[in-house]
Length: 97
Image (cartoon, rainbow, N blue to C red; front, side):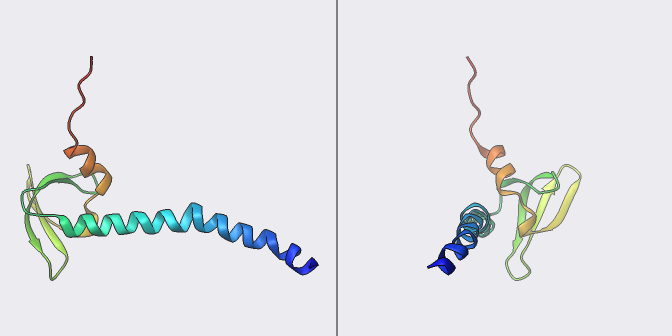
């Protein structure tokens, strides 16, 4: 019985680590993958480096997207398109009273 009680803090630390770090990260990774797969031509996006543009071309084999910006067309990895920033960009504007 003493061995179980002595080992309990380690089990509790592992459970806290799982629920606070591992689970939210896997949920976020799943959401990012789903977002990258749902991109289509004409979507307005923001990359993780802060470049705003519109998806011009998608290459599924290489996993790249061509984004048209004010400076021209640039080729990016699908994973470099930011989920959070793009959702904020495409969210409807709030009306202030």
